[in-house]
Amino acid sequence: MRRLSLSLFLLALLASCRANEPPPAPAAPPEVAAESYLRVDGSTSTLPLQVTIACQLLEVSCTWQEGDLFTTTWHIVPELNSGGSQVAIEAIFQLWHSGTHSAYVNLIHGQADVILVARQPSSDELDEARRNEVQLEAVPVARDAFVFIVHQDYPVQSLTLDQIRSIYTGASTNWSQVGGPDQPISPYQRNRNSGSQELMEELVMRGAPMIDSPDMILEGMMGPIHAILSDPAGIGYSVYYYATRIFPQADLRLLGIDGTEPTFDTLSAGSYPLTTDVYAVLRHNLPQGHPARQLVNWLLTPEGQAAVLESGYVPLTPGGG
Image 1: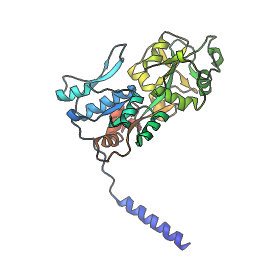
Image 2: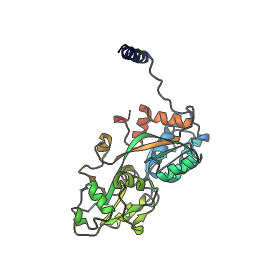
Image 3: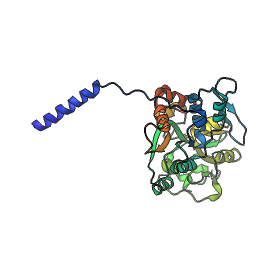
Image 4: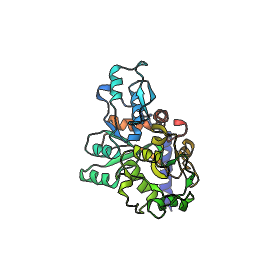
């Protein structure tokens, strides 16, 4: 009994000492130069976040700009006549992301310092990391969501996760089976190891086998969107940020899941059932002083979360700070 009392006393004394210690210094943004900017890769959907970060670190004003239908509808670019060196502006224009799976492979093989992605590594990517004796470290830095897309004119407003699974296992092949009109369902899918497909397998299917329909598997983030624009009976999936910020389409609508629609507020509150995280991923053995690790630490500060909000993502902390 005395031994227990002594242990409790020592724990209380240690806690008291720690309470009197000064708080750790807030993480400062990494010192980066335009000529030797960090090697950042990532998913298609996170490129605006990467550009927003670069604009802040390189002190260049940036703005959203509409593109064309065949590349991307909206993207962030430097403002040419609003400050910032020409070298920094050119460096930001050259930023690009190779896609989720390619970004993981590049990180594993040392061709990227940090990646920004909308999911954790897949089993294939973890196997690749083990083969190369690399341990990955994934840190949540923002919120996103996995969403289902239908045509704007389609009468179904919300589905349950069980109904979604029944569609993608082939148990439900007609919209009338899930509360819609008598019409065959076109269930569009994504390719293996894509960010959307891995989220679909993890969050929705949960081990249930997806219907074997190779002709419904689409490449690229735009694939399901383009398909459903011309197929009102179609259903597909994407991530909230891409579908609402990068490639929004007036003729498409996001389905509610279990009665809750995906919105900025429901993602922030975590009430939308398929709310997900956006991750900054680096190699675990990267030293503390490396600019990539400093960048990840800074993204978790109020200033970093404000940059997340400025990019259009939902920050981890309310208000972005």
